[in-house]
Image (cartoon, rainbow, N blue to C red; front, side):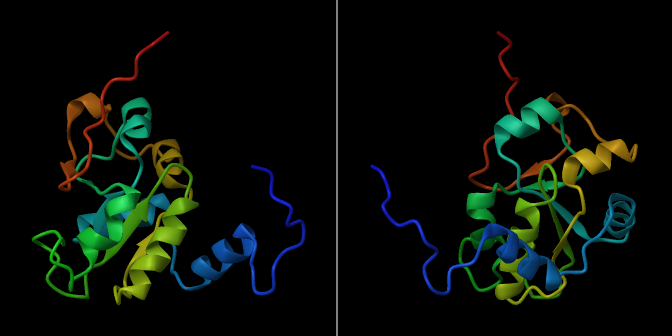
Length: 157
């Protein structure tokens, strides 16, 4: 199917505008600050899909909630929430591969009333580049939220 609409409809925004708007709502953290916050009780939430975690590894102690389940698992008013989500004051630090999808996800958590939610600048790549603790996915050092696929080894061609 070929789209015939070639001009942007009124009110439409580019992804760059949406991303900038999301980030304007957050106090984004560099990896070292995210590490320190996690040591003080913040929850690191990995939203990468299983294939990316299998290929790149994981952050020990993080909670894995794939992006398509995030709001349901972290909304304190939702029956599908995780057991520890019992209020709106949790400090949640979302990360993805490079820190783009996580910004949009953290802004969505703000919409749920989780005002302390944010994301990690540069994502998992920046975390590993900073020399912070990480492990191969096979180490299984993360907590998988219900409905989250375990990272399986990536077949090599």
